[in-house]
Image (spheres, rainbow, N blue to C red):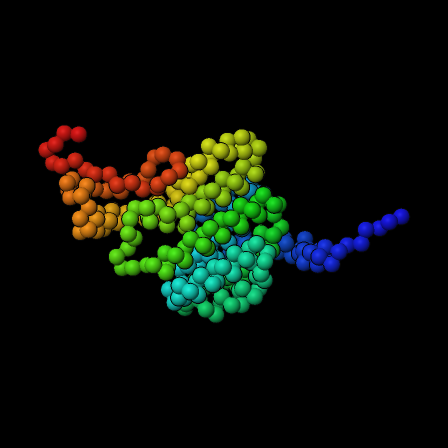
Length: 274
């Protein structure tokens, strides 16, 4: 009788696969870590059904590791880009998570919270859980982390006290930090539920705004100021349309699926009917 002999790669993959005890410990860690790095999502994610809760918790922690690098005030733009690229490789199982953590933790600013430091230090535990998911779930997580980590560094490199140059830049920034998360969550929910999956295409068309709902709430207090800055800058640059219609404006959330997240809305001049 012929017996198939495992290849070297197959034996290596089998050896690298964590034991059920290790995986259970890693899953317990991510549940404990979530409240330390989140206020809003730590209240809602635990309400999800078990299998969905497990992958969404993991997804949030992956994004939080990327955010911790992005938010660090003492890392240069080049350092952030290099670390983001390495993290993308780690999530895709193309680099070592423990080595990644050993590089990042000493570089973090003293302003990073202890919970954030602990999360980055335990990146290997989080990523082991990531690699235990099925191919559909892993593709969704890897895509989200890749787009987020490729998009955010550009804004760090070009940041200025003048702020963002246009509403298009604002919409693009919101997509990289939140909209792509909506797309990932839609994919995870569709993978979990055959009933939800029947509505996959229309849900994906709305996914960008769905993912940015929480982010929009956090930035709503400054949106009016951003609108005024964009308006003033365009007036200074001689925007003919704005010069001919010098009415005050505000930003509001778009109501159509996909496309922009914010749009400029002009208020009518006093005494004019609408």
